[in-house]
Length: 401
Image (cartoon, rainbow, N blue to C red; front, side, top):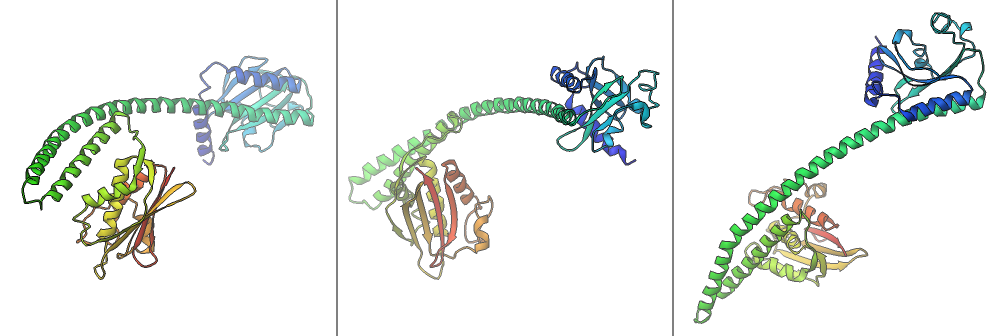
């Protein structure tokens, strides 16, 4: 039973090539014609051998047919590593009693066959030339037929790859069509949500402005900074809603502008006034970069909030933010003096749902840094974490020009 798996593999490859039930391919007919001319013989054929049948899929000098596998001359060749070349088949005990040789069905004398072996090593058939007279092949003819047998396999493999690619393209087109429909639904949904969110937000911003005007005319001005902060936050939220809507309408393409990271950081510190309470900031000169302002604000907000969140309770929290020029663009660093992260965990923290030193007292679900990586990736940059020399952690990201 050792032969069954090989026969099944052979039959499977042959079915994949899809040539048994089709008219002879012109490119394969051209190969057998050339094989006959090279060897100066009247007959040539390409044979594929399934588990039960011998198929002549391209012939020169005669009409192709299908025979039972046990009547095939080529079965023997499938198990030979080298070509089988027989000058006179009547003198060869392997073939002399075959009906195609002994006169019952034919009078073949000369026979030469090369195995056809797929690119993954499965023998599937033969390229054969024959004559009704004894003859010999010289070295050049033998080499040429070996090359032609390889080209037969190349033709079959290329045709298979082409059909697979065509099928893949059909699938891609179907997915693209589904995505277009999904994007249309997303744009419609985003437009509705944008309207539903901005209406109360606009009303709230207007109310806050009226309250501020009312309080500004009184002696009680302690609430004015809080109102200014709330009005500023509502303005930025309206801009965020507009960006989400634009993102949906443009099919996921974010608008890039010049973004002043110094101003973005000021806005972030204003929005995070409570989480950053008691944190000392040391801020260097930050650059103007090309990017999407909403995403870059979310990036800085996540990194700054993380720097404060994991402060060391044994010392006052200090966060340093700096930027410097690189060969490709800019590098931003946010360094804290907090508890730090074990070196073995640094590379894992950008994976979703992963947190450093889980602490019930620290809010979070482990998606902030994963979001940061997606933002930096969308800008064509890099991001990472390092242990700071004086303790704590440095989060860095690089953005191209």
